[in-house]
Image (cartoon, rainbow, N blue to C red; front, side):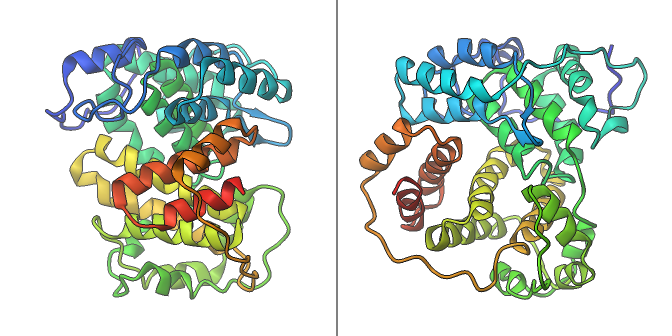
Length: 365
C-alpha cells in the first residue's frame, strides 16, 4: 500500500464516475475537466498509448520521449488511425525498451527520490498504486503542488506529458507522465520571492534578465538550471508580482510572440508548457494554485533567461488558415511542431487573439 500525505479538499465538480473511469483507463470523455465537452475521440489513441508504454521515458543523450504526447496531439488535431500508426512506427526507431517497473518501498516517502532519473521505474509503480489506493483527482491534488515546485523538469516535459495524459484520459499514461516529472524534478528557486514584488508586467521583469554569456549546453533544462543559479536571477525575480489571473495568459502570449518572431526552440517549449499549466491548475486545490503558478513562473523565467537577447527577427510570413496549419502538422514527422500547433489552437480557443495562428504558421512553414 502506498503511503500518502493527507488528501486535499475534493472538488465537487469532478464526478466519482469520471474518477473511476480515468483510474481504470477507460474514460470515454477525453478532456482534462469532466464538465467540459470532449475535444477528441480517444478510441484509436488508447491502444497506441498502451503500446507506447513499453518504451523508456528518454532516449539518446537524455532526450524526452515525445511519443505519447505527439500521438495525443495528433489525435486532437484529427489524424487518422493510419497516420497515427505511420508516425508511431517512424518514431519508435529512436526509442529503446523501458526498464521493468520496480516496486516502491513500503513506507518510503514519495518525495524521497525526486530528481533521481534512475527512479522512473519505481515512480511508475508508485503512481499506479496511488491511483488504486485513492483516485486520480485526489492523487493529483496531493502530488501536483510538490511537482510544480519542479515545473521545469526535463525542460517542462514532465508537466507537458502529464497534461497530455489528462487530455487522453489514460490513467497508465498519466502515471508515467507523473513518474517522469518526479524523476527529473529540479527547483528553480524560492517562489515566495514572487509575492512581495511590485512589478506585475511579466515582460518588464523578463526584460531585465540579462545574465551575460549563456554557456553552450546541450539540454534546455541544463541552461535553465544555470540561469536559476545565476546571482542576478533571484534579484530580478524579487521584483515580480505573479497573480492568479493575468500572469499565465501573459506568459503564454509572450512565448507565442517570441516563437512567431524567431522560431526559437526554447520559446516553443514555453508555449507548450504554458498550455500544460493551464490544463493542470484546476486539478490543484484552489489554495495551492497561486504557489504552483509562481514556481512555474520561476521556471519560465529561467528558460527565458537563456534566450538570445540580440536574436534577429525573422521576416514576416503569411498567416495560414487553421485548416492548412492543421493539415501540415498532421503530415509532419516533427513531434515538437505537432505539439506546438495543437497547443496554439487550444490556446486560441481559451484566450483569443491572432498570435497563436501566427506562431503555428511559423511552425509549419
